[in-house]
Image (cartoon, rainbow, N blue to C red; front, side, top):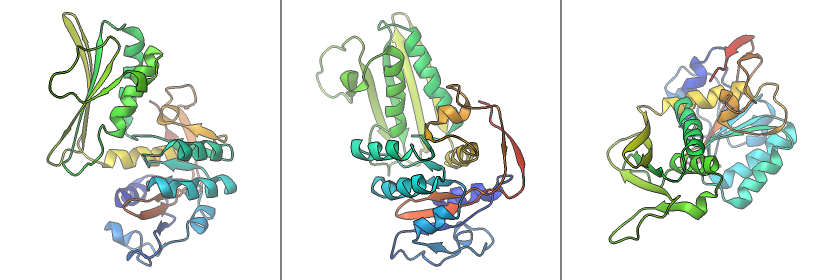
Length: 294
């Protein structure tokens, strides 16, 4: 994901790569961040100094491990640098740390940065609010054979959207996998099914099954580049935002927080930390008018 983010920043109008960080002792330390992503060398070495990177940046994109996010959010809050978090799997204490850090800067946290998936979140919540428990909700997801967690973070997010639409807590109604002889489906349950195989980037379906009719919502990702594009879009959106914890719904304008046009200038930085890596990138020095419509 880190290299995709580097390439996405490089081709985004008004965006400039700032630098990147890596875990202490990693063999990529000292390498040129652009060259390692297959681009022309930019003269920016990968370091293990997150504090220096964040201090020199206008915004940070962080795709890392849950344990690493805490340091990044504290540094961002201390300096007032906006942060875009793509890392998932945070526990309750880590989420509390992120929420506390949002008092000092704008933070966008999302389970999925695809514009299409976030439309799916919104549609799922709206349909769940419109249809009663006579319509059973099932969420089906498929990913590549190397993915180890199930259901996917996006599937859980869809379940949370459905639960929110119905005004219930997901944990009270979630059914994650069925095998053998099971009890009859309870009214209001939200079911999950996970499939793994091949090189599938990500497919998610939300099924509302009623008596005599069925509504199905589907999203299929053909490339992980859509996630990088969404993360950079979120980074640009943070320019001038008040401190607080935002989601992609805000960026896309689904909750009243998003705006149709954003004048974005200056530099933006992102830090992408994956498989132990953190990459940083910077945004534009020249002014750029950006359309952030849903």
